Structure formats: structure tokens, C-alpha cells
Image (cartoon, helix red, strand yellow):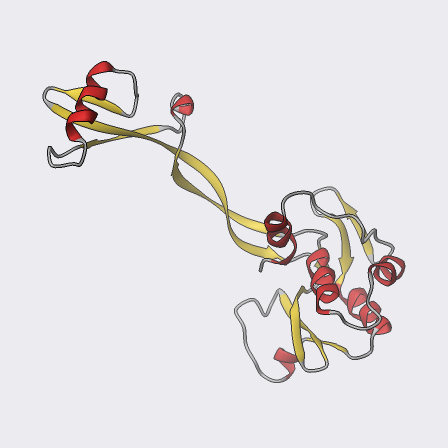
Length: 192
């Protein structure tokens, strides 16, 4: 069977079945021309190109293709709100402001009142305090997912490839879309 239903990757499809099905919808779709013409790319072991005639449309995963993107993540240090300063991973950075800093006297008064946790006095010096913590961020896309590939082919406008034809050919719901702003949708479906 070509479809694997796994909770961690959504509904997965086999790349061989996807290639054959897309060629059935339009026989001018080609795959992996880069490898056939000796063009190397850094993800050649896990991805291949999808082409319509001679135009590159997008990348497609090799092997079993997850429904959605799979990202490698990393932790990075970012400023956080003071309300989160008691987090286990939080740290506070202190910067001594120079008396030549614009608005120094106003900041000194603010620090003396203690009404803003960002400024404090230590002796005669004004300290600017910033709170930092870790956040998990996407590092690189490890797998692009079949939804990405299908959406890019649809956006390119390949004749014979429609939401309805893809839904029928692969037994998937192509009207199922992620939620969010336009920018979030573009990032979710088309970012590589």
C-alpha cells in the first residue's frame, strides 16, 4: 500500500507512487532531472526536483513523504518578558549606562523610583537590565512533505493538476489547509 498513516508525520505517501500519479495527471511532469544531468545539490540524498517541461517547480522528498514539513530545530537565546523572569532557563543581563547616554538623567530618576524592572541603580551607576531565555526555533527543513509539493505544483498551474484530481488520485483531502495569516500560510506551505 502506498499510504502510511502515522500520527507523527500525518498521512504519508510513497515518492514512487506520487511520481507515477502525477505523471498520470500530466505526462510532461518530470522528476530528478538534476541528478540525470549531473547537477549536484546538498540534499540530493533526500530530495529531488519536480519539473514541468524544462521549468523547475519545487522540491519533493524521496522515499516515504510525510504530509507536512519536518524541521530540524535548535535552541536560541532571545529576550523574554519580565513576567517570565522566573523561568528555569531565564537569565538577566546588566549593562552599565554611560552618563553620556541620551536621556540618562531621566533614566536615573526612573531607576531610583523602582517602577520599571528594566532600570536600577547600583551606587551612582544606572543599570539597564534585560531578561533572556531559550526558545526553540526552526533551523532547517529536513523533509518538505507532499502538501508542499502539491501546493507548489498547483500554484505553478500545471494543466490537469487540480485540487480535485490530486484528491481523487491520491485519496487525500486537498481542501484541508493550515490556518493562519497569509504570511503563515506561505511559510507553512512553500518555504524551503
